[in-house]
Length: 383
Image 1 (cartoon, rainbow, N blue to C red):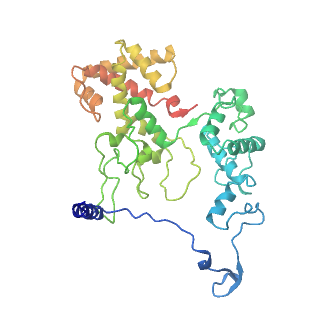
Image 2 (cartoon, rainbow, N blue to C red; image 1 turned 90 degrees about the horizontal axis):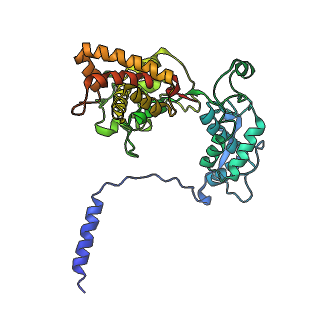
Image 3 (cartoon, helix red, strand yellow; image 1 turned 60 degrees about the vertical axis):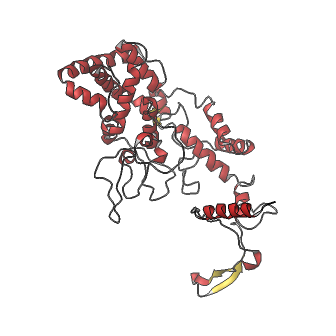
């Protein structure tokens, strides 16, 4: 058996492997027991005056560590998820509830202590927490339980009687109705228009941003709009810089990530309407939706408008809605015929050239209609 060629091949492969730069992933390890440092109290807080030694433990006001649990990070993890410690499960299901209803059973998601708000329904919170633990801490199962409940499936319509009885819906007299979060609004517009990229993982991307906003004082970094489908990826992949956060998301109460934020406030300002009406990302979505409407298989404007409403609102459109948008369509058709250059710009910038043989005037009018559909309160609101 000739081993030299094999050895030579092995050495060659080792050299090739060594030339590839490896990512050094830090791993946290506990020190051996005999090398653990001794921790002492500090007399009057003075580190130069150490007092008696202390051992790892939890505060006496809380349940003790589980029997046999090591007094390290693993023991803390076991303690957090112990059946004797209901706080973890309560916090978890409260956050899921807030995502479904817009507000948690404990409104102050970030504070379950004495300075936070008391739960609006203590028994419900406790039942959900126990069911969450019994279900193997499955978030999917907990969400299913919530969305299939009669409480969640109520109508979100507000009547004068309900408004008087439960103005802020803390007692869940009606179904949830609240504006979507910043990232979700953009993702929803991209999804309905057919532009949303399903690509997953990888580095952050840079979708369109107004020029001149993103500047770095300490380097030559610049905001370079990502090419191709990368500019249509979900909001979670958007590159974020704390000193210059993505502007349209900030307008919809997205945070700069400078501090941890467990609960976002919701505002209602004219700037938000300016974003969804005029931001190139949303204009591009309107153009793409207009092309979907034009290719829905029916040539009548009413049918195309009804298709757009169904795609955006996930329900059958009402005749009054179609009639109003049909009038708008006709008005924009007349305006487009008078100014073909503006019509072409409205239908193509920034999405790109129209398909061969497409009617520029008709698509410009449909773009205006699609822009209105994507700006309806029902589209921007969970309800």
